[in-house]
Length: 300
Image 1 (tube, rainbow, N blue to C red):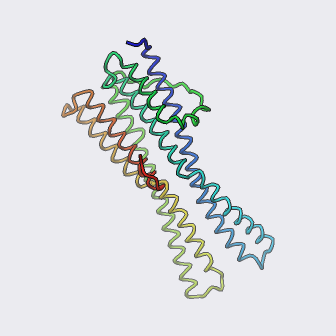
Image 2 (image 1 turned 180 degrees about the vertical axis):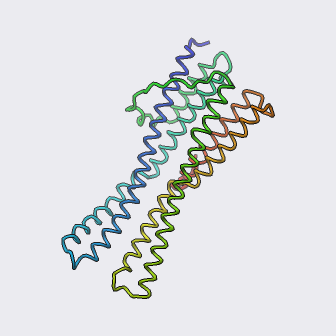
Image 3 (image 1 turned 45 degrees about the vertical axis):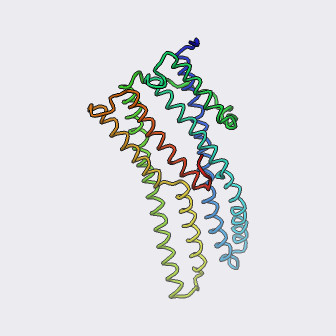
């Protein structure tokens, strides 16, 4: 058997998981900022351009400034969109996949279940780390500037503590709060777009009845542009889909844990942990697949 220091082995993998997790978080943040910038610049261009056209004869100086702002905002849209492109999204999902796979391996190792229940458990763990990193060698460059930020290992030492510190914590600290957060964000998008739709309808009605003496017709188009930008941002972020996925996964994990605690099933340690990690993995794969499909890229 290879001479491997067990605490050092699992700690090394845990610290590496932190690096990949932070790299994934940084990539995701870049995508979100890009999507917000695209929506914001599109809205700014529409508002400034319309205002510039209407102020042309009244406030020529202000009109020119607004026209320049509109042109600049419109020109920056494709620049901001680069951060949301296919390659960036693919890199983010692959970084996240490595991070989640390493996390699952660490928790399985600490719980002492297959494939980490035998005397070679530490060697197996390190080999799996090597295999995962080798598969994403083209992404290693995204992690080299991230220093190791040492974190204590999860307080798991067997399946009972795995149930508490992995399964229950994943439900209560991640999936349920995440589902609530996604629901709030989806509700805000729906509220904003509904309000804008009403405003657009009112403006159209006023123009239809009173004519366009007040120059409101142009703002109907602006309202439509703003609405479209918000809908596009919400669709890209997939708030409602994430809410459903998080809630579903929380329910599945909760029922699995209850069956184990009540002695009504899943008494085999290896099978129980494998099922918990399968549920978490399926959830991750589901939202990553939807993200790639939204981007027009087949999930692999």
